Amino acid sequence: DTGVSQDPRHKITKRGQNVTFRCDPISEHNRLYWYRQTLGQGPEFLTYFQNEAQLEKSRLLSNRFSAERPKGSFSTLEIQRTEQGDSAMYLCASSLVGEGTEAFFGQGTRLTVV
Amino acid sequence: GQQVMQIPQYQHVQEGEDFTTYCNSSTTLSNIQWYKQRPGGHPVFLIQLVKSGEVKKQKRLTFQFGEAKKNSSLHITATQTTDVGTYFCAGVRSGSARQLTFGSGTQLTVLP
Image 1: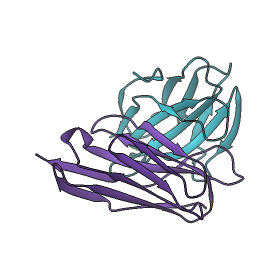
Image 2 (image 1 turned 90 degrees about the vertical axis):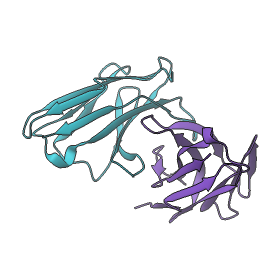
Image 3 (image 1 turned 30 degrees about the horizontal axis):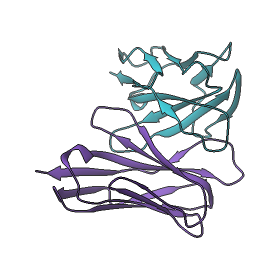
Image 4 (image 1 turned 30 degrees about the vertical axis):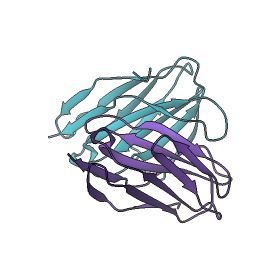
């Protein structure tokens, strides 16, 4: 068990609906990352927080995606007006501050848009 | 943008054979990390390499970081069925923020 928990583990939604995922990082970790992974590919960076500040967002990230980490602890990722292409595994990871410290991944939320 | 390429995409080996996966970045990296993802699981950290030309060993696994800090390799000696999974390299670009850019992974199958 890595200590990073994500909820829900699975989500099936109809196209056009909004969905929200939650990530609870390891408690002492300042950094929190969201990645997306599709079958046969490596995790693709979406966004990254240090404490409550969102420091970087992927240029590939549609404006339908928004992430928050209001108190510097848990984070939410919302996808508005879901599309079939949003179907993927959404992974959250956390790490300590420091150059290249290892990231601990959660089990992920598998989203299926029908 | 930064790209990290990994080859081969798939590798099937007989148990006891060796296995190597290679990782190449389009940009110089400050460090590179390796992760293993079992089928149905999430990526799990294996190791981090920071120095040019660095070599690290973990039991049967040997990791190398190239002199130019743009490529890396993972070599497994005498594979076992427990080695099954997808191995990803992930690089942090020099001077960039802290995001990891993952390669597409090498899926290893070990036949008993």
